[in-house]
Image (tube, rainbow, N blue to C red; front, side, top):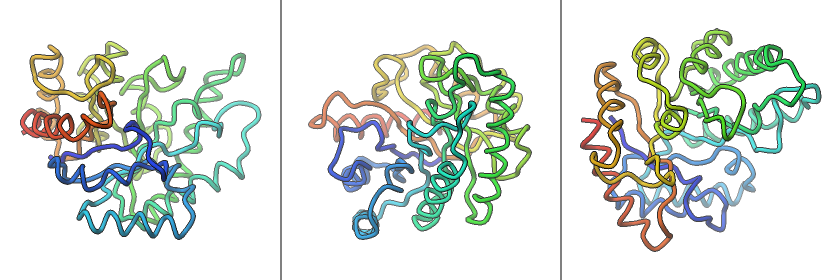
Length: 270
């Protein structure tokens, strides 16, 4: 399995994307970087080129992107601005393709939250239609969309892997698959049952952080469920990426924490 590092939760950098951590991420032993798509999409063209040069210098590929939509952009409810939604995902996917990104994670919990009083079934149908349309756009660029289940503290829709699979099935597009995030999985008290039942067909990517403080993991002894999760991935013969997505204790401790977390994930996954 490939082991990567997300930048969206690291201490903020000047660009707002976290690409400035590329050299440190490579030095810590990671195989790839995972950048926030919405923030990358906001860069000017010169700033985007500067980012590409930095990544090339660090010899660090962009295997995946997350943060697909900005939180202010709503995908469900009575007041969806379809033009802005399309402009957002088309721009994000265009830049993801230019970075040779293979997977784009569609979590965006605030964007997909169903407004109070709006029918949940109708909101689900809206999401499914968006996923299908996004899937066709992603296919043009040879990108797979990975639907992420977030926890119910962040959204009231798609909070388990089973629900993410249901949404992927409703979208009915080969470029729309699913992600399992360990932190959300633990917050929701989910089991490995749906992952084992549907993972071979739908699981294409994974995020990982320690439950406590959504921090960087360091060892198997931290959490009794680590073994269950990694055992499920092995049973599925999962060969995709696992991205560290959490908060370091500080900017100063990032390098040491990241190296330790990378060693842990590599050992646990293999």
